[in-house]
Image 1 (cartoon, rainbow, N blue to C red):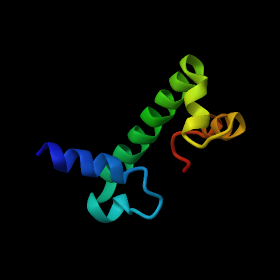
Image 2: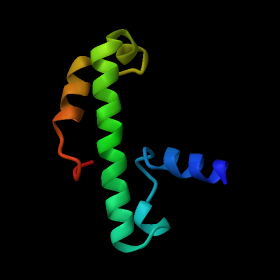
Image 3: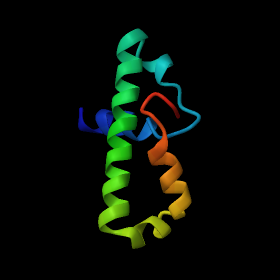
Image 4: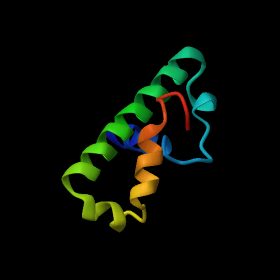
Length: 75
């Protein structure tokens, strides 16, 4: 069961993965929005607490700012 959860969560950040195809309807939409919000919260914490890791991830400060400016419903 743990592997399934990890595979599902990692698939959320794959631009080519379709969540709607795996989880039908409203549940899929709400789940995707929740994951985006959580991801952006974690990114904001990393940017604030350990900014050197942002460049290690291959991102720039502008990339992070752009991602954090998006509302939870936008990719």
